[in-house]
Image (cartoon, rainbow, N blue to C red; front, side, top):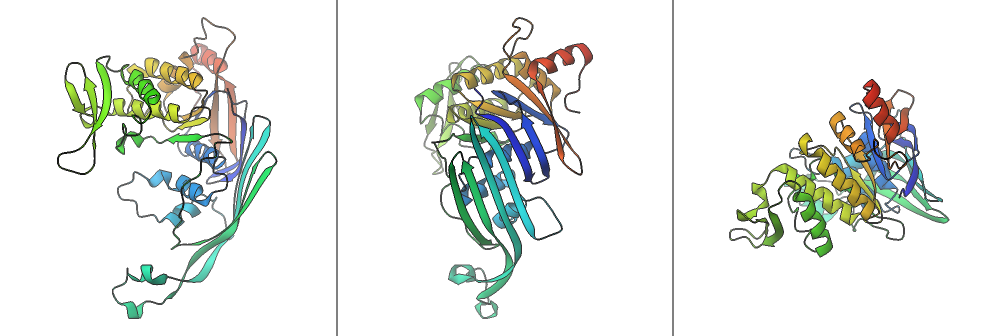
Length: 365
């Protein structure tokens, strides 16, 4: 099932005037480095924010979430979402068709210099309180968020500065759909199993996935740590017993994250950035078949970015084009950035497969 039939990104980061249509249940987004693949996934996420500023901040911070040396402030991350221009006027615009409903997100505003009170909590950062002005000068952004889903229109004002703290919990509007994003290195963040074992159905799906690597894996659990307050995640193996997940390779962790993402996105949309990260190509056939089958079972529309031709071929192979001549659940969208706009070439999976086989078609440009 394809929840989104098309996506338009008029302005977002480095993307201008991008239109992707003909979307299917499994959508591969490919292209050269820095062509906007990850930005497409983020733009789709904005369509699920319901205009919540906390949700928009979460999207803006994803790229730096696992960075050890990151010193970028939340306000800077927010500003980086806008296309770079010569004026202070700033705009983000994304739209789509959600079934027959128009779905759109627009954020307009201006960046400038303003004066604002720092408050007592901010003054704690200064050793010499007498030298700190309570009225500070800094960058500000003022604008409006306009969010539309069918006939429903939501408009929120935005007035934030470089010292603003955005509170609240990112929204998930179950009346529309859930959007789940899996980053290339999310499996390195820890707490892979903790979220899985809360739901027995999720856990069984994830177990089947890791058993593709090792059929002797039997269960997963969380035990309290003897030395720290943080619980320790374990995998039960029929031969080696209970072993911390840290003793397993990144491939097992990555597949756990992916399979949990599918379960969390049930009835909605899953965004997988650089699916090939940490998975050896010899496992592509089994893992990708599992992912496509699970997405169909859980009624999930999936968007996948990749740099790998082997990954593209592996995902196309899940359709068994040689034996079946009608069904095709995959589309391949190739992005190319120019000075004026971002171009897209959208092909059905079968067409890419046939050209790859017969002509060595380079789908990534």
